[in-house]
Length: 211
Image 1 (cartoon, rainbow, N blue to C red):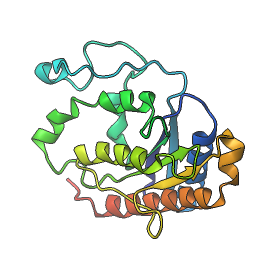
Image 2: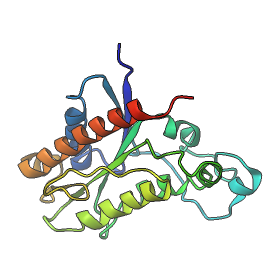
Image 3: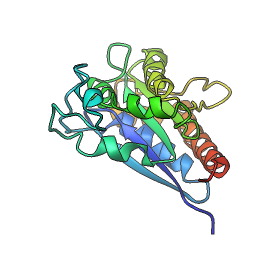
Image 4: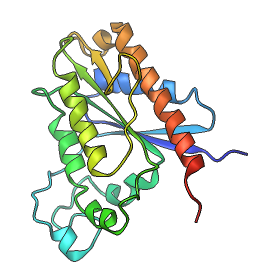
């Protein structure tokens, strides 16, 4: 029996509306691939303080923040247990949400693991999607900000192929879930990138050297 490939999708919206809907569409695309399981983390309602760059975690050699005790919880230890990732965000001022930015900033201690093994995450792919109120409202900027996180972690990036070059861009028409659902091209792109991430993660997992 083939081993299950486990993916984590992160919804970086402070609300459960258009971005959550797009994430669910991407999940549907991923789950068309056999032996793939998708978990979704919603940042809605979570209190996560942004990293302030004190480097205490690095100096103490620990995996998690030693300053804040918040809803980041055990995600520093649990995040990289998955085989692939998709991050989704609504567009805020041409970028990702403060919630997602704060969450990603808290992985500063990963520097320690990267220093020990620069190839550590090379078999762990990441993908991105963004939802904007206007058709060209900063989706690419937000997607590229997410991809920047993957690059800093040494992770390969998955795009959606033709016309979905960096990630899935969705147009909500400023009508939240209903508007996003009506964007047929955006929903198709979300499903495609979800499926492509699943296929890539599955292939990379199969090719990963066994200890």
